[in-house]
Image (cartoon, rainbow, N blue to C red; front, side, top):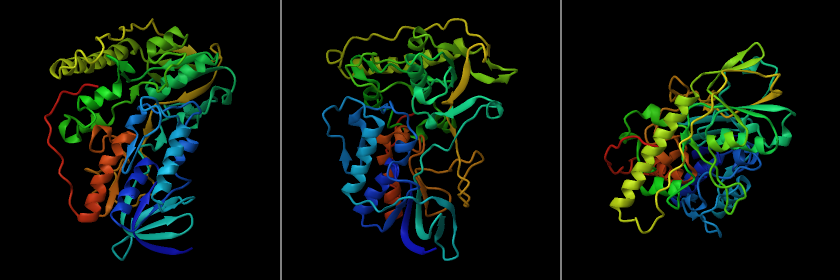
Length: 426
């Protein structure tokens, strides 16, 4: 085993880690990027075959790089985005040390930090955690002990890869609805357990939902401007699908579309009971809550159109039809429905057992403010709502990367422009 000494170690060669590496290179800062696999490993091994980005291609921006392809309003597939990351890393010769898993991160006696990997040991003055917000998939109570084939969404590839029979999909945000839709199109009987979610039309008044989120300043809102940071950081992903147009299946994907396709909608999964899945009787209230949130945001858009004088520039307002779900069962016998598989799309829990420093909160998440942890020299990027609302999106990581590298290089945080506190909506 060899011991290396370097000024800065970045852990993770996804978009956030590479954004930090690009800026460190620009500042002439000595560093390496330790990666358990290769560049963009999660995009290579933890995405399903048909996945496209939720954000339009023009929102794929990293320091020193932006999308220049032929379809800025389209949506990159996972494999296209992976190739973009690989080209980005090659463009500045990112010092990625692949095939290297960090087994522990702790303080060293010389005032540096020691990172023990499955190969060598690295000593560094600064460490940037860029492993992403995903930890370990959340598994509802009882499922782990069942005879069902349980597949977290990061292990799902396609319908043909699953055992034959019906499928219970848990979670109705972006991943859950997209997978349920794909399975139903493949002829599977699908039951969808619907938890808290955020409904949003793919396009409104002729523009993409993300164009409006950026235009109205929602993506730039900082954690200092929200009433409850914990709630903001647990906000569910938007119920959207990225599909390039023209597309034979249309552009919106929501519970109404899934119901029309034959998916059985149920409330939040409560557990398994004697060979049956049990669900809360909360589907109507959950759907109504998501609709209210959506309309609050569309109200904001309509006001913005008026105030900015865009009425003649965009299409008239036509809102999604309100969806009233049919009566939902609270108990579904698995055998009679032919259900042999459960696909989990119910989110992730923090998982940092290798971090041996006092930077984690009681849930195991990294405690930070603008990427700085309570241990000087330890930073983090790519967390959900790390500072701006778009921190967890590919496009937003560049802002946090610049903040972290500015502090790491000069010891000061760049100013964050104060903004008025606004009512939370979408």
